Amino acid sequence: MRLAEATPLHDAGRIYAHGIRANLDQFVQQIIQVFFVGLVIGMERNVLPALATRDFGVAPGSFFFLLTFVLSFGLVKGALNFVAGTLADRFGRKGVLVVGWLAGLPIPILILYAPNWWWIVAANALLGINQGFAWSMTVTSKVDITRPEQRGFATGVNECAGYVAVGLAGVITGYFSTHYGPRLTLFGFGLVVVALGLLMAITLVRETLPWARAEHSKQKNGHFTGPLPRFPTGISAHPGTWEIFTLVSFRHPTFRALAQAGVTNKVADTLVWAILPIFLREHGLGIVAIGWVTGTYAMVWGLSQLGTGLLSDRIGRKPVIVTGLWALAVGIAGIALTGNIDAWVAWAAIMGVGMALLYPNLIAAVADISAPSWRGRALGAYRYWRDTGYAIGAIVLGATAQWTHDVLPAFWGTTVLLVVSGMWVALGASETHPHINPA
Image 1 (cartoon, rainbow, N blue to C red):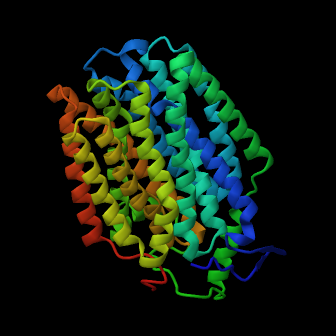
Image 2: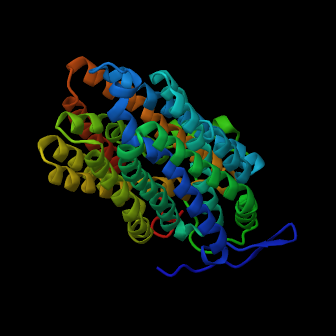
């Protein structure tokens, strides 16, 4: 697909050209930002769950207590995703990004000095703020400066950079932990990453809200060229925050289907984050080997999004999302049915492909049918539900494992949930790509 550029648009005496090529410098800056954000969350996905009993006093078999660190993360990140969207529409994207990085500064210190698991729970609440503000703004800013037909690719590049970083951080911290210990590794690695991300956000990132306002002005004045998106009808000219939230959550069938798919994929990611390391450790794998399984999932997820975003720009969002949900289900079932590291790495790769198919394209689909004037809030509402899926997953999967005294039922429950979610999107959502299904 040719990444054609929009005609420059004048807004308040300035020109805001939309398109990746026209804004390549800021597009790259946002890629670097999300890469650093991914490193922060990735640094603990391998190390902390595997060492919860040895280093932080979590009793063996206390699955629900273990998952409280994911619960705190999901509740905070989910809520702040929506807050971030509202603040970004009102005050701008860059300020929210910087606040997200400031919230990340205490995380390495809390991990270094944690006397018990509750300090890790507190650190992950701050991680929720960091991710809810910083990662959200990298997505929103890319959507601001690109053309509608580039959004699948733009969100794919964004999530690619973030989740490649998640996978790399898991592998790197796994190796370093064997030499320097988990606490010192996470402290040093985390502090360097957060400091660099904050410095670059302050000095190199530009505010992109003017691009969104310029796009809104162009549509309002009838200067928009190309197929019109399927924006929802029956919504106020200047909708409030609650109106946008209820629209995305409940009142619009396509938004509703996309939101539940977001919840479901994060339940699956909770399984990988907190349950899969325990499952692999029970089968005799060490930290480095666990890092390779979980890291393969994250890195394949990340790298594949370079192609899956472009794929949805060509054939539409809906078939790619549905295929992704079902591929993720197949990968999880495969891990549960096999018993050696080679097979687990292969199934983890299939899970990564499934996440790559669905993840950026859910974001692109929400952006497709969100008007520029309230796009930040719509993306925030979707991301609220999606990342609250971490909290839902922590409760459901933790309770399931606690009740059955086994982690395997959590794998099968997640598999069934993903199959049903794919059916919901297939039957309950409309295609959102404006070139494929225009208004």
